[in-house]
Length: 129
Figure 1 (tube, rainbow, N blue to C red):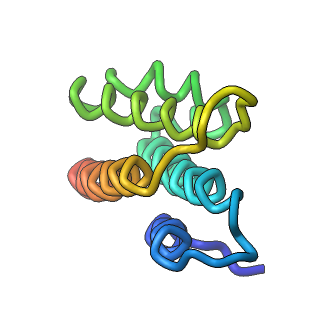
Figure 2: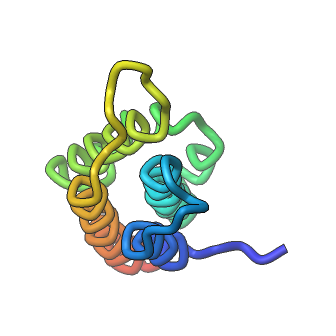
């Protein structure tokens, strides 16, 4: 089984937005949001695993991980991670009286995830791990 990296997941999310297809009509927005959210979750999990004192947090619920994030990252980055994760989580679920997210919303969230992945990866390298 091949594990996709956050970059792979974000690339697939972007591909769904860029290539409208009759086979994915109606599902591509939520699928794209799910792939972006998985990229973010994988990055946050990797962040916790890289820090010896917090490796156990990698197995906690994502909300718990997000609550702890401001104690190990700058607050602005932690807040952006939490906001984007919540937006993507909401977009992943079908709500009968709401429209699915549009391509520009998804692209913005994917851009946010991409920059957060880079920033968190830089933070991991900065810890000496």
